[in-house]
Amino acid sequence: MDKVRVFALGGLDEDGKNMYAVEINNEILLIEAGIKYPESTKLGIEKITPDFTYIIENKDRVKGIFITHAHNDVVGALPYLLKQVDLEVYATPLNANIIQGNLIQNDIKSARIKKVKRGSKVKIGNITVETFATTHSVGESIGLAIKTSQGYVVYTGEFIVDFDAHDPAFTCDISKIAEIGNQNVLCLLTESIGASRKGHTAPQHRIRDIIDPYFENAKGRIIISTYAQTVYRAMEILNLAIRYNRKIAIIGNELKYMLDKVVSMGYFTIPNGLLVDLRKIDVNDPNLVIVISGSGANVFRKIHRIALNEDELIQVTDRDTIIIASQIVPGTEKDAANMENELYKSGAKIITISSKQLYSMHASSEDLKMMIYLLKPKYYIPVHGEYRQLIDNANVATSMGITPDRIVVLDNGQVADFEDGVLKTTANTVPVGEVMIDGSSELDSSGVVIKDREQLSTDGVIVVGVMIDFKTKAVIGGPDVQMRGFVYLKDADHIVTTIMGICEDTIKSCVASNHYENMACRVEIRDRIAKYVLKETGKRPMVLPAIVEINLAA
Image 1 (tube, rainbow, N blue to C red):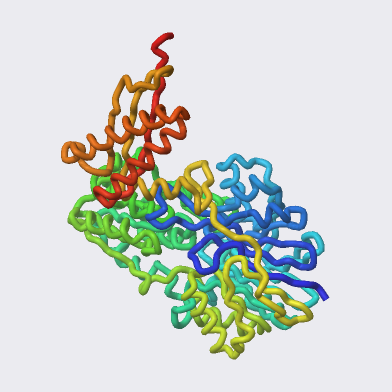
Image 2: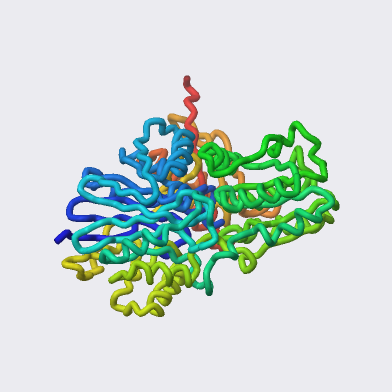
């Protein structure tokens, strides 16, 4: 029988950075390549990707990567992966088009993207993959059933069960899922984000009924926020604008791009003249809907700037109705609070839609139960979520009669080894980690740069400059001491004087010992100043000495 190994390179005990692998004999199939957004303590870091070391070291065995839908938590790291490993990428046509545009923006113009239809069967190397349609907030999302001689390994992706979904881009193929379930499912990997919620997600994922009264009754402009990648929600907002004959302006290129792809593929129709450019119309038109979109905390920051009247086009007035439909997610709490506080000062009518009113389009407990019922897995692996969410998901499986010994809660890098239809061990591991993206640079999560930034943010920096004669090594200028973020210079005369003395004494000591060397002397100055400052103030500022040697004889 096939030897089957299942593991995660990211996505377990965390929100985002999803990346999973299924090894069948000597071939590897990757699923997803996502990013996560950093905590506020990760100074200057824009995003975090999985460490691709294992993939790079085994690139000859990797046959391809499946992307189930075009959201950053599952596809945001793909450009960084493809710059290191040339892989075939499999996605449905809509998502493939969105991915293609993202790759081009990242200077990847020749990616090998294979478009697969929902409900189709694909052969990748010796691995056969069947896809099935799911419902999520971007159209044409899919789950995967990977065939092995031990049974199917099924990955649901992100999904909800919505029997009222009739738009072909957002339907879920229950009959196909049930068909797979009748063919022996070895293990099932399901998302955990919404596992703690009771009931089904549908119909509480729909914003239409919540905001309809405001569209009908608002006397002035409507300003509404949404996350850039929630295409389903954006389509609901557009439909309401059509119903009430309101013009709509979209702020945010990412949402514009995704809607353009949905429209170009015939999944949605926008009447001529509905979408407007704020630069070409009266921005105070009371019949206007302004959609503010963005990713993560950016959407809250955009609205905050508008509330502060820092936007060149939009100023909030007391005639506006502002609807915050982008719920707070981990890492955005402070930005959301700052935004909301400033909005209330504007006098506008503020409506905040909470996560209890409007669910994200992730599987709730009853959705998970239905998937378990249809697929009848022998083993169950909760994925995609923080640890508490993985446990919530495991508890759902327990309630469906799956025994604890068949529920496998893994860590990133921990391998589930299956032989002859049985889980043999979870003791083996593969290397995992994080890579932090700072603009165009990639930084190791344990790197010096991050630690330096943390040190600068808490204790500041001391810069000491001194000029010495190139031949005699005598001090001819300085020392000059500058401080930032440490103590106020005028209140630290004695500290400055002592630091200057340490610098001069150290140079003289190095010269007197007859083995002066510029770098070694600077290190000694740094260490002596740091020791003194810690004793004097209890702080650990970054100390940067500079010794400039001047050749006076030249």
